[in-house]
Length: 566
Image (tube, rainbow, N blue to C red; front, side, top):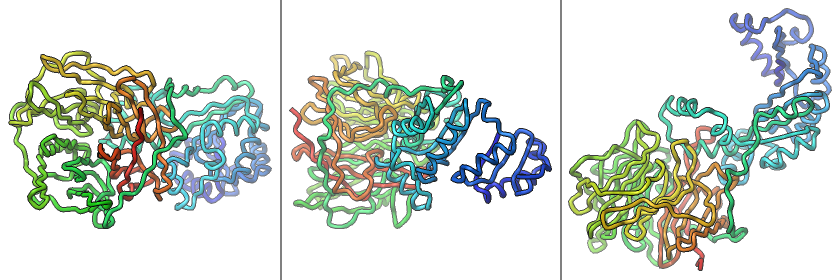
């Protein structure tokens, strides 16, 4: 094994090794003359070399001097190295390796996709650290990376992102073990980060057929009606004042009255710091301007909950259910919000004591108003809990007396999931997407249809394939299902808006023209409210807290104008 790094880095690493007797014995350090006297390290099967990779001639000469045999089958590993070099320098390394070794495999791990919103956050992070990723501009995607290696003399090359690698090459039992090591609930940032890192394998000579993987063909997604480059226009919600309390994610919003939106919960900005939020935010439209305000929950009924459900009922009540403080601390309380437009535009909160058997605590679930035998119920479905990664159960809450009720449901139930979406439709419920038990996004559309005896599960069959997604939002307008944003591991780029005609089964994808937005527009962990008469959607919040690149939030609400699909 020959390890190459900058001379100063190698000197520090060599000193650490020499000061640890166990490591000295492990690699069999020798007192050979030559490179070892230059602060490098020579072991029986391990050589640590301090050479700048841009000095190809010196690198080649030193490797030959200390015994490298280029005729042997050779594995070259580059973990986020080449991209920090200027492209002509890194291409020279790739070309040198192809020319020098007769039988070799070159494995690279580094970043791609700098142009989508998460990629912009990632790219800017490295710029601020003064660690520019040079390869991102000229080689931004898998195809460009593969073409580069083939042009530089390698005979075969495949490339997959880390989502594909994790799902396909880490055994399920090992994934389950990893996922249970500690509480984890940052699915969106984890999979977004993985979609921006690749493993590339190039080979030549006797190792040309030894590549460990081949890429999937986009998971079999076949889009028939892609309306691109047609783009939907967005504008910033014009507000009287800046609204830092709306910079949040994992929250929920609901239309409590015409042109009146309430937002609760989540994680975001408060008094110059990031954390879980307890305040209640109101957006009220007066003329062309939205008035934004925020007030505290004095009785602490809401708690600092993330990923709850907030359901606007037809009688102007809103039901807040579930959520969590941390992945080990779910919130079990049920709160009723009521908007009184005739009493000084007042929003009241009331804790609800529900009778009957309480469902297991959960978050990342949905709650939808349904009608059964002329009575209104809240249908709670899916989610996750401290003990279960995904839930597939459902429960009915009677909205008259707040009792948990049993209602017969027939048919084959959908796959367990969380972070899905649900909408009321024809006195039943439509459910789309979500993250399934294997941590893979789902693309099915399920219908909980009312019957004379209760409800029945049915699957909505589509003519066009839907890109599986989760952490999106959803609305229904004129029998058109509207999906907004989300996260997927099935596609290089997920359309910002997908229209699904529930009558014909066809889908249409649109992209958002973000010229009016001066920051990377994040369409995950957001909330959205439909203004049906204006054919508009108000997008509130969105973003996340990435363990690598920090907290990234949408700066203010966005107004999306919907097209008229016939």
